[in-house]
Image 1 (cartoon, rainbow, N blue to C red):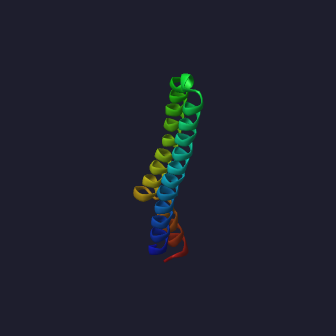
Image 2: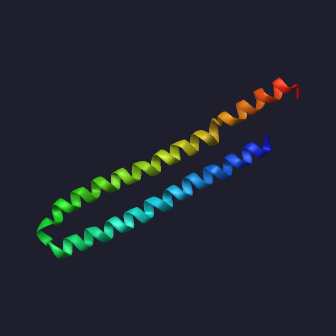
Image 3: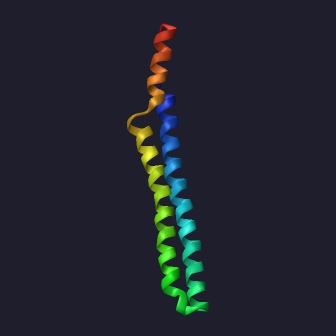
Length: 92
């Protein structure tokens, strides 16, 4: 039982950490490209900025979905219930 809880904690940490890392890298690349595009064609800056904020919102949604899944596994772990059922069936 402790092994399942420990592995779940590691999985939750990886899920949140790698999700945040990926979003951070994506936002950095996207922001750099926005600055490059605005420097080359300043008249397109408002249009580029609108698309930039839309893309940032979509990237942020990916991280929030990861946090939601991580919280699900933290507080309502389905693997613990399966483990308890398997232990009861085995007679332990």
